[in-house]
Amino acid sequence: FDHTHRPSKKRKMKAIFCLLFLSLLCSRLEGFSLLVSPSPKTISSFQGVQLTSRETISSENGLKMMRHRKRVPKLGKPADQRKALLRALTTELIRHGRIKTTLVRARAMRKPVDHMITLGKKGSLHARRQAMAYIYDKSLVHAMFEQAPERYGNRNGGYCRVLKTMPRRGDNAKMAIIELV
Image (cartoon, rainbow, N blue to C red):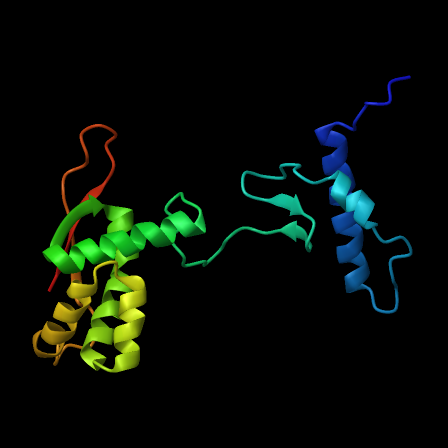
């Protein structure tokens, strides 16, 4: 008798499907409750089982669904690296006025760039401190706060333009030029 035997993925899938089907059936019937609820040990034994290409079992709430309508561009990076990348790209765009990057990164940059220019238009001390916390260059923040009100005074948002260019040579990634209007 082998103690290291684990149930196959097919058997796990059947067990998960039965639990979900029973809970759905019981939620539809009024006055009928599920006599046997899955214990945390049962759910934890199914962790990491791949249901489809994007659904997995998690311990917090049982089933983790797909990321429908989630508007945060992940950029294939963890949160700290993604924030640092967007900060660096935003700083360089404000410094140079035009940079070339991938299309996805350019589209993800629009929101923080617009926010920084809006802070520059406000011109208050609080807005200046918020911009200093995000942009890496202190002198760049002071220059932006001097120029933003006169350059973008009559424009309400949409301070940058994304132009598609030819794909990158090495990996055929979609490239774009993002520039300040």
